[in-house]
Image (tube, rainbow over all chains, first blue to last red; front, side):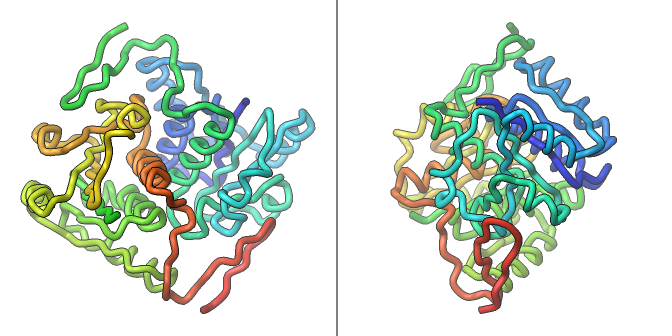
Length: 175
Length: 175
């Protein structure tokens, strides 16, 4: 299954850290890349560095027209999930979600109202306020599990560094 | 099962948003509260507001001596998980984790090396760099699942507002 993230409403400076967390989480949990509706090049740079050090092929692509990206995705047969605390709770919606190509839209504070109509599914990762980073992580984890994969065992070929898991302490190996 | 979060290495201003995401995620996914090793009162205030609006009994408590908090917890029979990308990958460690009272330590950029020795388990939520918010979310989700609960169905009695889940759009009800 292909999974791409669309990050909306990113504000330069103010959202840089949270959006970087969104992108790193997407990468770690098996998404192929993130479209960023902003001119902020900092996120791209951070993820480029992560890729050089830790491998894989995750990309960040700056876009300008989020609506046309969603429409293009759907025209090509892809489906779209919008994560929102107002949507159907994930455990209730999960059985319905079937897709070969999935775009997951992650908004910052506010999103354009028309997004609710454009998405195939408006999904709440719990109907409580919390964090778009947490919501994306759980969405990806449960989604991969439904397709028989463990997101935490995603492989990242290439890169310069590899962690050797330790019961206590740190070990990082060059490769 | 009781779950309490210990947030270490929080820097006032710089980490305020991420630590708020950590706390809101902990609350949404069924932890009872968060100990914050910092004098920053902003997080407490945000979570107080969340509690007043959305219910439940989640608390944030500022502490000064993180080491003595861990020791006290262990003396009372509690166990301690430290989330770190260098630890044993969660899917491999999961069968070992059994506890009635669990403290989950979530560090910012760097944590004191002695923490690795004080924790019962050093757990990686995937051995890749990503986000402490995402790591905590998945830890809590999988932990609750192992105990037969869905973290996304956590109940929050009291509060003023309640979301009525919608396939499209927003509905919030007073209660």
